[in-house]
Length: 300
Image (cartoon, rainbow, N blue to C red; front, side, top):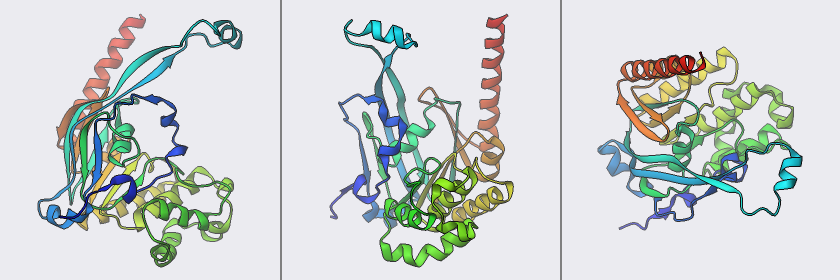
């Protein structure tokens, strides 16, 4: 039986760049995220790409209601800061299948990005288990893993290595990545000179041209011009037809409905619903409208 390797050995993203990790996570870490790429082909037959079981993530964050510097100085020496416990993910279970595009929707703070980071092995879960059957390319945030002082060309190699590619594999894929990004001569300019749209082009190109078994995209298609967005969405559809597994996190509900064949809705770390995109989106919109109406009534 093949030896299971920690997910972090199969996929390394430059997680020190992630602002999320500034929060202090509860240190009990009983959960696990494991890559089972050795068994990929067996499970492709069964269509399972990712299996999430009873996933929970708890962290604590400080509470500070004294915003001014003077108040902060006065508070020094008055004991420990108050903290609160946050259930970022609460008993989430789901399977993602090969040949599918799973859309993830929910309001800000619902746990969407947190779930993607746990699945990617960037954040260890407090409880539960994630099994990943195949290679993963993760586009979690605009420019994550990129070094602004380096050129676009250099960052293609940096991003490729972060996604688990070898240097020779990046050499073979570079022309396709550069062509897809449409950056032209700017590929050799420092990325600190790039616009947000140029960042998006290169980040998506590295993630999508690699043709991973599993591609996770978290709000990375929200930046850039309309033409490139359409090109990127067409690429997502191509990957879907190639019997790969994709997860798309977005607030653009029309895009989710157009591209995805299944949707999950998260709210405050809980899985509220899963099913047909049109039905789940309608249910989510109804919930948001009711909540908005209730908030307006309270303000009156």
